[in-house]
Length: 89
Image (cartoon, rainbow, N blue to C red; front, side, top):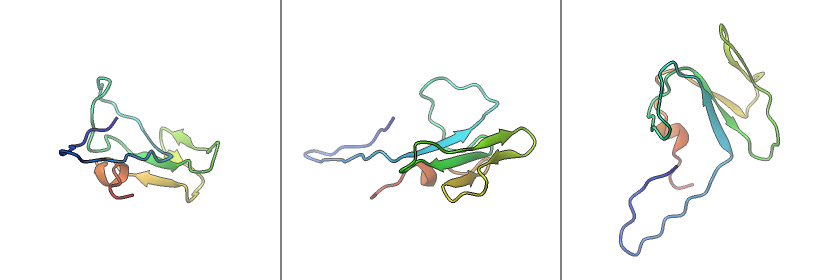
């Protein structure tokens, strides 16, 4: 989902990236709710050029990707805008 201003005669190009953010939240959200902060620790996975990535979640230890470079930990309460919005790319 994306929303952005479009001025007269302007063109915006939106290029999808092959990344996904995984996290759990104890709060109930309605479909389409926009979140600006991570409600719990998460993990950002770069799926570029891959058909599969192996990750696991342990309730006591959190996310585990084996320390691979394609996974970036996301802290609870971390601002999601710089992680998920990449202007100019």
